Length: 325
Image 1 (spheres, rainbow, N blue to C red):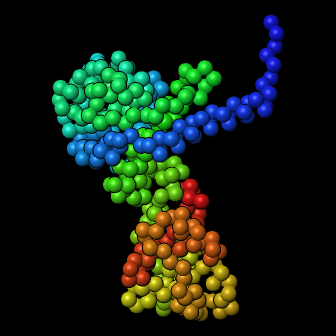
Image 2: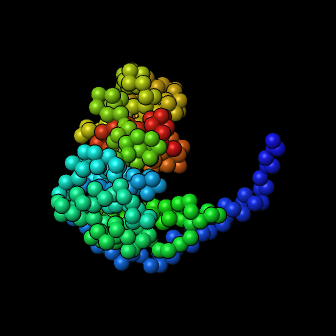
């Protein structure tokens, strides 16, 4: 048995470029000639009183799952149902008021037959995605998103490559169009993405700040020996100084203590505090707050309400611990 020769780097790179160029050309061709029913499909999804049900098998099933996931994460209730499981009881998940999006490159996937029949029986509209406009699926569909004819990128022209890329790209276009028509915004997006890096980048100041009894609050007339006790008890290394109306009058940091070390305990909090400290509103993105702290070379922001009353304290450490960078 002879050992396999290692692949030549030039050949491998040439193959990669060929695949990407073939698939990119197909996507560009589709963008220049979108399916005629695309706008109607977006309207149908927007008008759905129920859920958007995706289905497909094999590679088409994987793509259908991804489209469903994207819809669900951008404000459109959606789920994936496996066509074989649908034939064994899961058809009960598909109800009047739903919209079915069925994916099959050939359009002749036998496993979709029971889903198509169920949808027709209960007047559930079908959006078909296929590369074969004259297929069984597309003839049964109410709206047809036909993929353009394009060669598969593999050397034998059989492995689903270009076709799956086209289906995924068209699904993304559908999802984003629906999302924009709904006016879906980043605050709503975070609702469906609370975890991980994405959730951290969309976190607001209010979600990470310290508030209530945790705040180290003193009045401007508080003697510094008492203010130091508050700073030590709260453990943030700062004190928020209020005027007689409860409005933020300043902030005492470790730097302020060092600058006023001579006769410190004989002073008042108002005399030691830095006036007009950097502040942030509660609804500011934490990532934006980190930018403010970095540019000002500080490690904490006072969070204030519209009347300039302190409602929280955000530290750079809190943001970093939450994954905001």
